[in-house]
Length: 75
Length: 144
Image 1 (cartoon, rainbow over the protein chains, first blue to last red):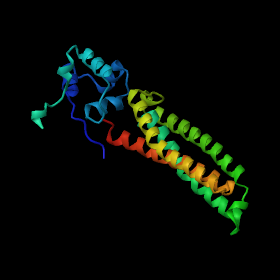
Image 2: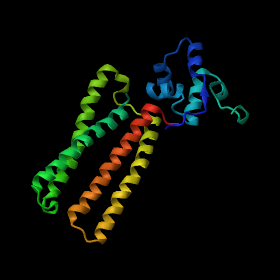
Image 3: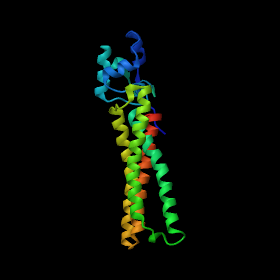
């Protein structure tokens, strides 16, 4: 059984806030396939740090605005 | 479905078809007699070559059909594909090792080359199958 990642992301909301950017467009801009972007959005794939930075840069926000990780007290 | 996932499925399909064909052909040629007397080498090598060619053909045909529907995924792969491939290889490696270990034991026991070759072969086949299944699961359920 694959453990779901605890890393949450706001990619869908950020796409919506940036003129309803499509998954295909964002995927092209960060250099991955649309399926990989879908997997990231759904928490089925944890991107590399470099890829995470590329996503943040597209939206011109910090990494924390895209990804979050629960603190131990939130367990 | 992305390019590398299609390739993984192609390999699995060919493997699932090819192995029973090999077993049936060996049994047919043995005709109820000892399996060691079957001329297994041309069969096995033919099957390995046929399997490689078959996987390539299925991948190409499937890729062309999929590319007509979604050109974006026709031949692209990315970081996730590489990570999934690496994970599948690691999973499969354990089963290759079992085949290799089995072959060493059979050599020590001075078994017939038929059994040694087939142990190695089925070790590889099992590694490819289990590694392929692991990849497919990673594509479908996630890799985190």
